[in-house]
Image (cartoon, rainbow, N blue to C red):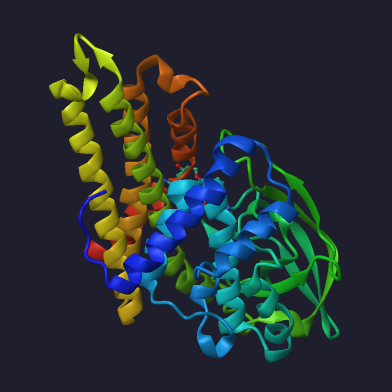
Length: 385
Ligand SMILES: Cc1cc2nc3c(=O)[nH]c(=O)nc-3n(C[C@H](O)[C@H](O)[C@H](O)COP(=O)(O)OP(=O)(O)OC[C@H]3O[C@@H](n4cnc5c(N)ncnc54)[C@H](O)[C@@H]3O)c2cc1C
């Protein structure tokens, strides 16, 4: 897995989580629900167990009811979840950042009402930014929130929304003004009180959890359900992206590491030309390249997390980690399939699933191209968007 410096506490936390994931969770996602949708009750029960290890709870301070872990420890723990299951890592990620936004931005009455449920794993959150015509350019968001007395009336459509059909609450980015940057505002919608329609999307992979379209038709939300100030959604989203990109990078590291582990195991068992294939130099070279990519991705991820923890601006470093780790996952998973030969494309081996899952990673939370544009802008001061 490569040598990394960890404190004794971090290592103990990782070891405890790994034992739990191997014994209780891996069979759920690799066998029982392989490529099958995990019902909300089952996913909720798993999330509740994970909160004891600092997942979801870690992103919120102890004063606000969380565990208040440091960012480096959190990405270490999150890598373990992703190495077990990308599907599981998605609700963990979204609920973590939903809880963090509620803790940071919500008025007291919303914090008191929703934060305990988010932190215990009882409530699911969705984050609605993307729309059918709005992906990489969030400034073009069209979903409109129109003021009507002490309410807002919301109309629009969101798409690709993780946790969509699980969600109890939706943090919805809406247009409240015409200025592209200062005209966006966050609202917290409670699915029971401010109903929105949800339709799941079937994908190449990541189908054990929900990615959905969300339709908002004349949804009346109290003005008191605004998160942060009017017009500050873009600023707050960019703040959150810097952090969440370090997490998505850890998803890439976890997936790539699992593919490497599977490839090593197979290469030590499979015999061709009179010896195990690990003894062939071209296989050894491929494994060396895979392991180096995994470690490079992990080190970029740790750097971004350490900078975030230190309160240093890390937009470029988080973009580098997200870009490199997610592309590394694609490359390493493909190489793992190659090492498995024909077996690698069958459902009898995990690498087939990992390769499909890896292809998705360079898209959410800003595509690879968007990360490259962010890095380019940081290097030259010139925007190429
Ligand atoms: C599994 C999954 C989960 C998701 N979860 C969520 C969620 O929970 N909430 C949410 O709001 N969204 C979510 N998304 C949406 C995700 O953020 C968008 O898919 C992503 O931002 C890309 O937008 P798009 O798909 O519209 O692609 P587009 O923006 O249309 O991009 C298409 C292609 O053009 C490239 N491109 C775009 N602009 C430029 C440019 N200026 N220069 C060069 N190339 C460019 C892109 O890199 C890409 O290759 C999710 C997506 C997926 C696949």
